[in-house]
Image 1 (cartoon, rainbow, N blue to C red):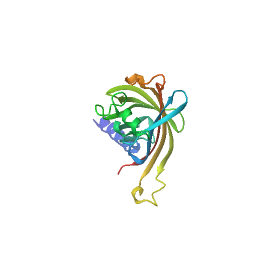
Image 2 (image 1 turned 30 degrees about the vertical axis):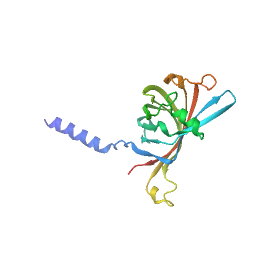
Image 3 (image 1 turned 90 degrees about the vertical axis):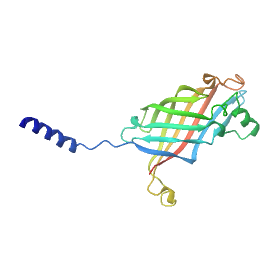
Image 4 (image 1 turned 90 degrees about the horizontal axis):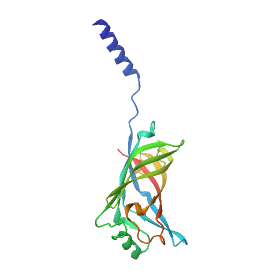
Length: 200
C-alpha cells in the first residue's frame, strides 16, 4: 500500500511539473479584409475573375502544433460577383452555383500538414452543389501576433491577428459544373487572402 501511495504521489508531482499543452485559439474572419476569388481561362484569351462577398466561419489555430488547427468556412452562393450583372445572374443560376437550391458552399478541414516554416497544406472537403469532394489549400502564414491596428482602432485592442494567403486549383466538372467547356476552362484557380482576428 505504501509503495502504491508513493507511486501515485510521484505521478501527481510529475503531472503538475509538466506544462499543460497550449490550447488552440479561436479566430474569426475579419470580413472587411477577406477576399475569396476565383479565375478561369476565357477562350484562351484572358483570365477572368469573380469573388464571393459572403464569407463566414471559424478557424482554430494551435501555434505550438499547427497540425491540430482546424478550418470551417461557409460561403453564400448568391454573393458571387464578377462586376457584370448579367453574368452574375448566370453564375447564380442552375448551370453554375444554383444558389436558390444550394445557398451555401462549405469547406471543412480534415488534416493540416506543415510543408515549411510558414507554409502548410490544408486538406478537407469542399461542398459545392450539395456534393463534397476533396480539396487541398496550399497556405502561407503571413503574420501571427498582436494586431498592428490595436493602438489606432479600439475594435482590435487586445486582439491577435492571423493573416494567410491560400491557393488551390479544382476542376469544376467534378461537381457537374461543365457549361461552356472547353471555351471556358474546366480548371479553376481559387485564391484566398484573409485576416483573422482572435475571438474574445
